[in-house]
Every structure is written in C-alpha cells, then in structure tokens.
Length: 345
Length: 266
Image 1 (cartoon, chains in turn red, orange):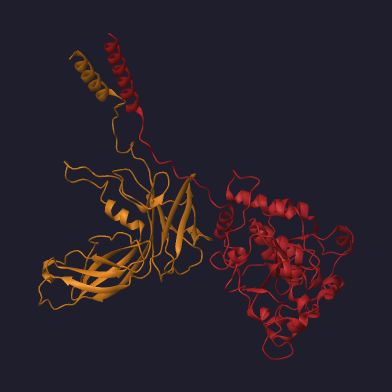
Image 2 (image 1 turned 45 degrees about the horizontal axis):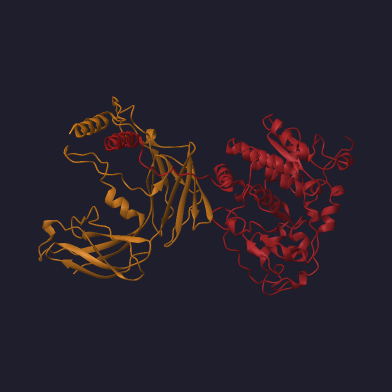
C-alpha cells in the first residue's frame, strides 16, 4: 500500500509540474534600456534651431546708428542698475533687472517690435544675456555693440579705462598649444525633466539668466594658470607676426586657440568636446562680446566658463591697433557717437 | 497498466489544452509595428544619413511618406566620446547638421529614442582589405583571395567582369568567420561566375573585389533569409534575422562597410 501511495503522489506531483511548466514562458532577454545624454539633447535642440552660437549671427550685435534710426519701432531694454539708468538712458528705453529679463522679453517677444535691443554699459553683459535669450528662441533680440559706450561719450569711461596692454604682454609667446583630447559632455540636469526639450532648455536658460552677470574677472598673470585658457578668434588674434614691434608675442603662455568663423571650433563635429568638463575655462576674444556669447552657450551646456571682459582690448591693445586685421575690433574714439540721451526714470 | 493509461490520457489532455488560446488572425490587426534603422557607413565618404522608418501592415503598399519617422531623437557617439546630433531632413533620413568624413577604424554608436523606446547600434568602420593573393578556381569557376586579418572585421568577395556589358556579382557567396588574431591570411571566395564567362578564351578581364564588414554583418548575412516569405509551404521560415540594432521592436543594420580595390584575377 505505501508503494501505491508513493506512486500516486509521484503522479500527482508530475502532473502538477507538467501543468505549471507548460505555462512558463521562455526566458526572454530583457528589453534594452537606456537614456539619452541630456547635454547631447541640448546640442541637438540648438542645432535644430540653426546653431546660433556657431553661426555668423552670433553674437547678434546691433550698431548704435541703427538703434537711433528706429527708436520708435525697437523695444529697447536697458539692463544697467537703476542709478545708472537714471543718470542717462536712450529715450524710450525700459529699465529691466536681470532677474525679470526673461519674463519681460517673453511677454514682449510677439508684441510687434521689429527688434528687441538689450543695452548694458559696455556691451559685455548685454551680449551675454542676448545670446542666452537667442538660445531660448527669442530670435529678434540684439545687443547694442559696445553698449552705451558707443551711444555717447558720457558713457564710455569704463571702456576707455580698460583698454591697454596687460602686465606681462611683453612676455606673450607664439607657441601653439594643443587642445585637450575629447572628453564627454558635462552632465546637466533639468528642473523639469518630464517636459519637452524646448521647455527644459528654456527653463534652464531662465535659471541661468536669473543668476545675473557674474564676470568678476580681473586680469592677472596668475589667473590662467588654473584655467583652461581659450583664445577664440582668428589666427591673428592668437599669433603675432614674426617680425615687427610685437614679434611673436601673440598670446599668454598656455593659451589654446579655437577658431571662430568660418570654422567654428565649438561646433559639435569640431572641437567642442576638447573643452574640459570639470575644469574652469577662461575665454578671451577681441572685445569680450563674442566671448560673452560663447560663455552663455557653454554654460547652458554645463561647462564652467568665464570670459575676459573687454577681451584683447585689455590684453594687447597696442597690437590690436597696429595690426590691420585686428583694428576692426579695437575700441577707439571713432566708435563713440554723440546720440542724445535723457535722464530720470 | 491502469496507471500508464492514466498518465497517457493526462499528458494528452495537458498537451492539447494547456495554455492554448485561439485567435482569429487578421493581417492588419496583428501587425506589430517595428522601427527600422538603416545606415551603411563607408570610409572616405561623408557620413551618410541614418534612415528611420516603420514597418507597414501586410497589404499596405510601401510608401516612404507612410513609413518614414519624423519624431526620432537621435545622435551619434563617435569613438565613444564625441556627440554628433542627427536631424530629420526628408523621407526618414536623419543627417548631421555639418558634413564630416568617415575614416577607417572609427567607432560609431547610434543612440536614439522614439516614443520612449531606446534604440542603440554600434559599428566599427573596417579598414580597407589588404589582399595578398588572388586566384581563379577553374573547377568551380569562382575567384578567391587571401586577406590579412583585422580584429572585428569579416570579409566577403564579389566577382566583376569587364566588357560590354560588364557584369558584377549581386551577392556574396559567404562571409568569413571573425579572425582570432591579427595579420593571418583569411580565405574568401566569390560565387561562381556565370557560364558565359567561364571559357578560357573569354576575352574580357576578370576581377575580384573583397569587401570588409563590421563583424556583426556575418550574423545578419546568415540569418537574413529567415522570416522571409516562404514559397515552399512545407518548409519553415527559420529563426529571427540577427540585426545589429537593438531596442524593443527595433530592427535594422547600422553597419560599417569598406570596399577593397578591384583586383584583376589571372
């Protein structure tokens, strides 16, 4: 009897096993999972909108003459501190603080103004904010070239005070320094990760704008020792001629050359990713305005960047006014206009 | 005996009914849409477009406007680090905004997302095949060659006949196994040339071209007829095609290909 019972039990267990195993699905490879690189998505988005920073549209400067001729049709946003605005501003200009700049432009973007002009004292912060606004999709925003300094002589004191040759300019060199090897893009996070890439980028830009303009860079010969120093411009900005008064005194020791137009070295297919993703980057250009724009772009991508205000005008002004190719970018009295301004609110 | 009958009847019942379900199949309703990825990456050329399309149900005539996908977020990862975005242009083709040239030995990864589905493909662009010897097999009428091996590459060969009209093999006879070591000789052969060209007195020249592929091509080559329409009702369609692009319901090839020199065979 016990043998029969054992047999019955075995039969029952076997039946149950067959029944259950028949319903078990084959082992299937788990589905592929992964996520897109956020910085890559941002670059993709900017490129899909025309890659403004790496095009001849950047840094979206507008001349004082054009602004003066269109005072009634342009929206003029003056972002200087209110005391400076009260002391003198363009008629019709609106004084807007950086922390409300994004919303103000967003509100007025489609209000029928043919152009929105951002104005700062020297054209440095306005170039920075203009590029951020352009990246956010406001494609009719411009920065007044050289800022209020080009509007009237009264406002040109800071520009004139900053032009000159830096200490150590006589020790600049022409040696070519190699770019870093390519490294991954910085890791960036969004405050609104569930939204579309356009909304994520806009929120990020709004956040960056709200932090204000932080360019407290004072040129010293020590500054660039702990930074990845980038010279952004044409070859003549980087290398001085072999002979002449500035023979082979092209750039500070260690500066690395990145070309602007027409090669645009910060394009994705070029050398963007040779910028270090975990080191401070310092960019200088001709007069600070293009570097301001590239700083805006690179900050959105997550790089730790600052730029040298007034650019090469502050590093080697003597060479800038000497070299024909650089003269265009040197701040001179001929750039200062005598357009009217008003005082008060 | 009673037990044996019991077991037999029990097993038969289970086999017949266990977990079976009946469904009336309708080609349109059972169609499971797949994302299709296509790209052939060749050195010395501008990086090509990557095509993203979807499969269409049976009976729906193929129309690229119906099949193309416009909502794919995609970029390349070149040499495991450099991000190069891809942008929709037309007909499901996604291209880099700026042209650039592909070089031998480069690695490209395709990273994409469509409606929340992650898509991934990887390929290494092969080096130009280094052919050390060619010959003609007069017995089986094919050309063959010895190629110096490279890691992560496989090889196929095509015959070419010059003349008027010229002729060219339309497929590979075989794809070699991946080499296990560098710079060993790998034998690769063509399919047999058509009968009209086999005569020793045939006047036109005969050539062989060896083509190098990313190693993943081999699995695709030997599985590609699987799942095709079966003309013989008594044979099985075979297993799945082994694509080198991964993702849920994603098929296709993202493959590096390098054609070698066209070499005359004597």
